[in-house]
Image (tube, rainbow, N blue to C red; front, side, top):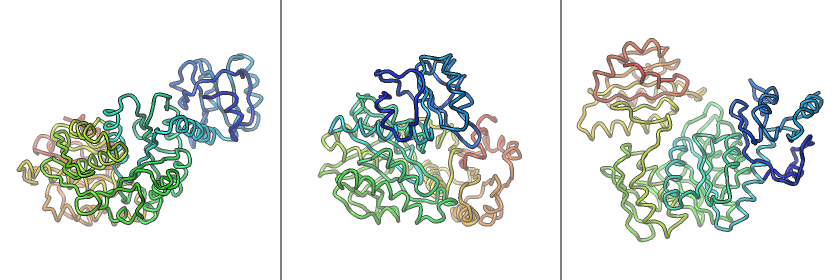
Length: 465
């Protein structure tokens, strides 16, 4: 894929030094100098606190076959000197290495898509649950088309992670599932220009990253960029699924490929009772009975991805239902149950906090456990900016209204929580001050809820017995 002809076609490429042959070079792109493997292509990215160019000699010792670097004063002289000792290595000078990988990824996925008419590019975005939806959809489609589905690893969903995902596309893949994240205006549009999605799903609209987006309406407009891209790329025929119970997503303009769903609204009405999901699809009554998922919102997420999978491959709907019955949440260091503890120390914003709290409360009540027998540990919700006070107070008030009594607030926003819940069991600025109390909580209560943004690293509590 990384042939001399392709290099010449990229606007970001300025010159090459060293080995240039008609043979294609490795598209195994690596931006981590510590993990470079023999024969790979190393891209020297430049960040706020690092410069990959400083590690070129190191990656050459590891066996890098191609080195991509950004033009800068006197770098050509350095490269020419290094190249004398590595005559079999190709050195590529670019205007900007980030632009290079984005431009190359764009070309790669376009070429991959053009080779077969039935290939599908599906993108997922939303304020919460992107990775969960991606994992679910990937599992469902892999169950029907084994080894033919490529999806984003982990949460590599930004301007660097998306290209790195695309570079993993091989000829045997028939479906690409690309997760898209953002925290600043314009990012979804930029990612869509790289990926060129023809199908997709927006999970929901919430206050995630509102510090940088300034309003939920702006967040909605940014996420809407994916739908607009799908309409454009598919001539309005692409399959697109949204939750019509979401205030903002219910406003999407109809299109031939748009399907809305919900428990109260939508083209497809869901009924979720006792862990069973039922709905009508193409005059077929669908029943998904998944015993592995406890949370109501995740059952709804499973329904969303099953509907999208069925819309993409309606003739496979029964196989998709069978796969949905068997789906198990992978461990993603995100929301998970650790014995009697619900832990989500990866991400927290108002909508995800509300969803997690509602699911937790529903589960314990379903087990006939009183909330007095449960403990709640809530930490900071980051990237809310000027809305931090309002949203922390709002969450605390909702706890109070539920009649919850056993609560600890942790972090720099504890005082905002206290405005809505003035008499918790405790409140701490630092996690370390809470650890002694945690030992007693873990053994005393039947169920414990722990959720906060990543900065507090509350997952470390699990190692304290």
